Image (cartoon, rainbow, N blue to C red):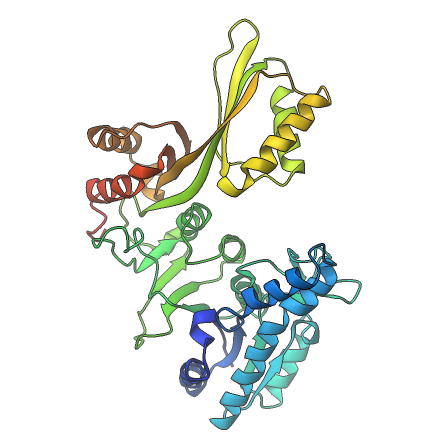
Length: 412
């Protein structure tokens, strides 16, 4: 039988009624002749509650016990989903990560999947099981301890299962009905995309679009897993949602596929750094060791052996970055006058595979922002993306203006 993977996020299984609704969708696919692997998240709000309990019990917690507690939310959902399917006379059983087993690294709370042997579940399918309900977000370490994959890890679980089992498709059910040209809450002209290339989705996910977790898109692109993003709250047709697929499967697309934004960005500048070989390595090694997620980087032209170095990072990592840089200075690894942090900026990006073959996208973007009186603080580009840092108060205006300028409300 062909295999289909269906993943249901926390809002899609938030109540028993929603679990029943999700189970009916699974039943429809079983009736079509699929063997179905269902990946479930914890019920909405449950993971936050479990994390809160851990922090209240032990602020300096043992990461192994953290995973043992936090992974339990998915186990509950998996059991309830299996019971619901059984009540519908669909042969189903629940699987925890260790039972599959989902083999991961030992990095607790941020483990990576290394292998998913298919024998156990395939054997049960051959014996008559029609649905394997697997707890997402979790696995087992080489030491035999339960691990978790980090927030959004159930998306990654779903794609990994689809790759391991050669699934026909991986359907991600969530609270939105697909991938949009931008956030519909920012502009009512936002349009749902029927298809989007893996690379575009990866850029949008990494730039702030919350629809899919970045690692899941990376996995899908590597193993050529067809991903479909659907709403669990709307009636479905065969062409519902957004298909994330190879660039070759998209006949014609706009030059720009979407406008992404990230509100909680900060711009940090080291003023008057000694300009010498290895200085960039010293700065960004210190930041990396401190767990600071650096994005945009700009270095000024050197004057009299001194230069300025600017980068962006999430606002909640600014204090960590400042401490790391000051510690590196105290250790004699970096010499600079001061570190300046601007925590009132936002990142706005345009993304599209069409940029590879069309010129003038950057010029148009900058002209649009200029016409709106928006000053650009930092610019970075890649083959299919242009990102700028601007004052946060102009973020929504910038998104709306760019969406209009590139006519994203129109189809390809």
